[in-house]
Image 1: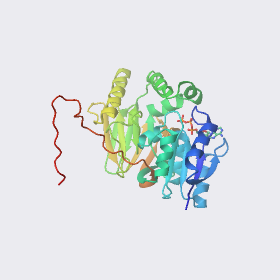
Image 2: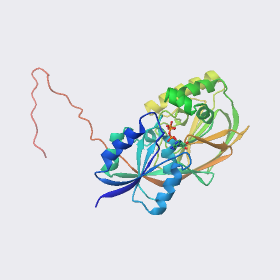
Image 3: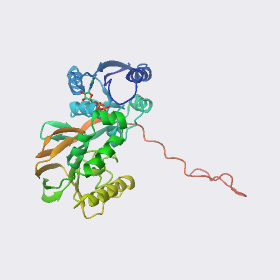
Length: 322
Ligand SMILES: Nc1ncnc2c1ncn2[C@@H]1O[C@H](COP(=O)(O)OP(=O)(O)OP(=O)(O)O)[C@@H](O)[C@H]1O
């Protein structure tokens, strides 16, 4: 029997032609999946459509849009066991990058058609708001707020970097208190980030490097430089941490893992969750182990790590298979 899925499609996400994108998705998926296509509008958000699809008991949900759309759909289906397909068409594609998912339409559709699923963690903020990627307090929230729609349209991914650089001039330190299951930590910080999953570009989350999104724990990074020069050095170091996969060893950056984290700040700081400002501190975030089921690509076969051709006088004798 043909599979079926509700496709939630944001027609204004990213910079590509939405009609072409939708036609391509239909061309790739519809031979194999009956698609119930729902477009988001300024009035009807992706999470409303997703909740309605869950209530109808759909077999699978496919979300296509920028990080806002993907997070909204994922958040609405946390805990439902309905498999989620992701087709990224946004500016940063943090969602796909954080969860090791492809970010072209073709590869994303192939992943959905492959049918392989993986259970990953989610998070819940203040007991009610779902979180899939990360919550940022302080610097990250201010940076996200600066990178508005116009800037993203104009500069794409660079918008976040430019607003980060701009924000360095208004660097504000605050007294942070971080409470976990077994500790209360007080320090003067510029950013506290709580990640369930994070792409390498979310540098303020990279204290531990390699963030694990199915271990039942949240990864907390504390960034506490004393001044702007320290903040620049710490940011650069975190970028290297992300790229190398080695945890930080700087004195002004700390990290820990916890199931639940509560952050207070003096003065109170803005809080951003999955790219949206949700309010001010205090904020509480708890891990929801195994909260999401997503379609994932098949693990690539190991690349060939042998090259023996072309060597002068080489002789190779194959041994019998034992
Ligand atoms: N038909 C529509 N017309 C106008 N706005 C819409 C429509 N559908 C959704 N939206 C708005 O789009 C926003 C979500 O956009 P989304 O994050 O998916 O894309 P993006 O902003 O291009 O991506 P990114 O965050 O990666 O830059 C929400 O604010 C939502 O209200």
